[in-house]
Image (cartoon, rainbow, N blue to C red; front, side, top):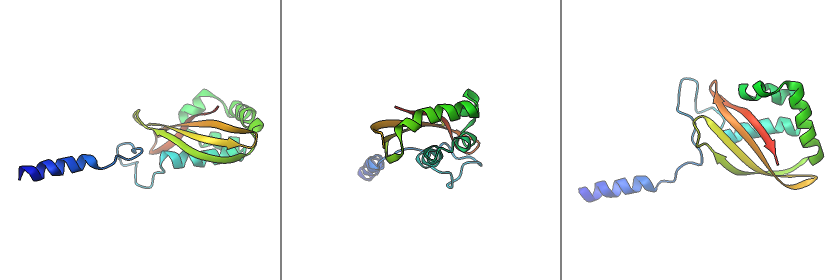
Length: 137
């Protein structure tokens, strides 16, 4: 009997942990909430398409509190235009070690720069993931 309990306990620890975890479930957080990676990719499509005004509107409160829409548009255009079109974007890492914050990194290849890392920081607010910061290096 004791051997079964020990074996069951050991087997429960052998299950692989998920790559990331959603914030604690609440009335606002459901299974339909996009993952941090999904949400970051949705937002990046807007930036890729140079739809900076909509990307600003769809960003979170922290992002909007640091800059106006005009400042974001000028900054994003200045960073992204010289790089050219996105050729590929591969997930590099997801870090959710801080409560309700996800940092997503992508290895991105642009037409004019082969090796870049894009970082999208998301905050879980109002029941969904929202972009809090973006950088490309």
